[in-house]
Length: 243
Image (tube, rainbow, N blue to C red):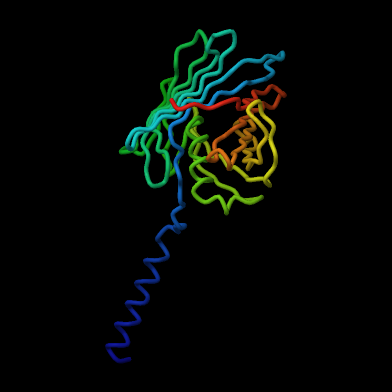
């Protein structure tokens, strides 16, 4: 075999071996991160017995940093507060810290140590490996808004997105599936919305349903969390303001 042909065959074999060990990569997704906003909700729910109240989702951004806070209130008391802080990148939100606080309890948190590639928890939960694209239980709301707004035409019924979701004590993979465009009626009006649903996993029994409305910048105008025993929290949008 001529030397030139042999060199070409060796080069081709080397290229094939190199490609075989490289991870597959999908095309980068487009994102459109929402501007700063304060979303006000009425809520209804059941935890052993029915109850109602109000909630506020505050979304703020400055430069390449963001802060998000969701507070659920009843009789003026903050029953539950979730906080997420992080950076904004070409892929959307990258959380650095997630905090969760219940009435009368100390805050517990998850910290995203990106240089070390791990997540640590304040509640003595074992560390978790940090995956690319990871979100926390609060940042997920605006990350999904950013992804849907970035490529709205792709969000037809059946489309899914999966990423690592981090709570105050755990990390697992969540998959959201889009449904057909459907109308929702909330205190602030009636709108066609894109519904994204996360079904319970083997580890967690929560079902999460989110309705994103194209006519208001793909913001989540309804958020419903349902437990396996039937308890639920349903946030229904009433109004918005600039923070």
